[in-house]
Image (cartoon, rainbow, N blue to C red; front, top):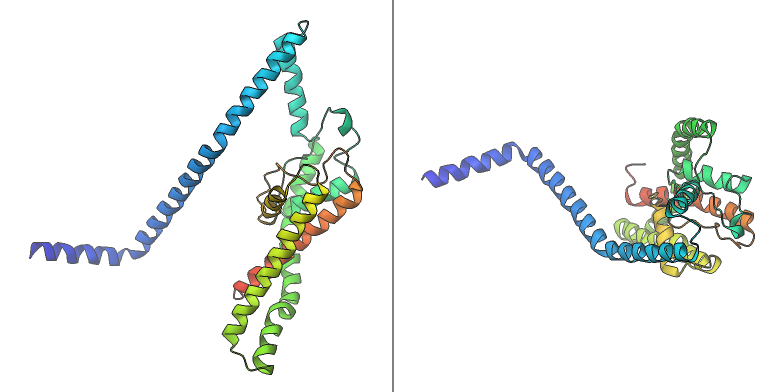
Length: 272
C-alpha cells in the first residue's frame, strides 16, 4: 500500500514538472554530447600533436647545432615574431612575398567571410582603424545580409519548392505529401552535389596540397559557417589566376548562403 502511494506521488510529481524534467534531460544530453566530442577529438588528435611537437624539437635542436653562433633565446625571439606575423596572415617566406592579404580581391573575400559570419581568421585587420571599421561594418552588414538573404529566398522559394509540388499534384494527380517528400530528396541531392561534391572536386584540382577529403571538409566547414581557418583557398604560393579565383570563391560564399536558406525553407516552410 505504501509503495503504491509512493509510486503515485512520484508519477504526479513528474507530471507536474514535466517541462522542467525535459529541460533538465536536454541540458544533460547536451553536456554529455559536448564531453563525448571532447573525448573523441582528444583521443584522435593528441597523438598527432605529440608527434609534431617531437619533430619540431628535433628540428630546433639540429638547427642550433648547425648554427652555434645563434643562441636559443635569439632563435625563440625570432620565431615568436614570425608566428605573430603569421597569425595576421603575413609570411616571411620568399615565395609568399607576392601574395598580398589586402589587395582588392583578398579584401572582397574577407568582407564576404565577415558578412557570412564564417571568419576563417587567416586574415585579420592590423590597424586600429581597420579593427574599428570591422566592428561597425559587421554591426550593420550582418543584419543587412540576413535581410537580403531572406528577401531573395522569399522570391525564389515559390519557383524552387512550391510550384513544382503543386504542378505535379494538380497536373498529374499525385499525392501532395509524396511529391513534397520526393522533391525534398531531389533538392537535397542537388544541393549536396552542387555545394559539396562538385566544389570539393574543383578545390582538390585547383589546390595542390588538398585531397578530396580535405576539400569536402573545407566545403562543409564553410557552409556551416564554422570557419576554422585551417584550410583557405587561393592562398597557395604559386596560385594561378589568383584574383579571378578569389572572386569566384567570394561568389560561391554568397550562393552557399542562399542555398542554405532555400534548403531550410524546403524542409521548414513555416519558418519562412
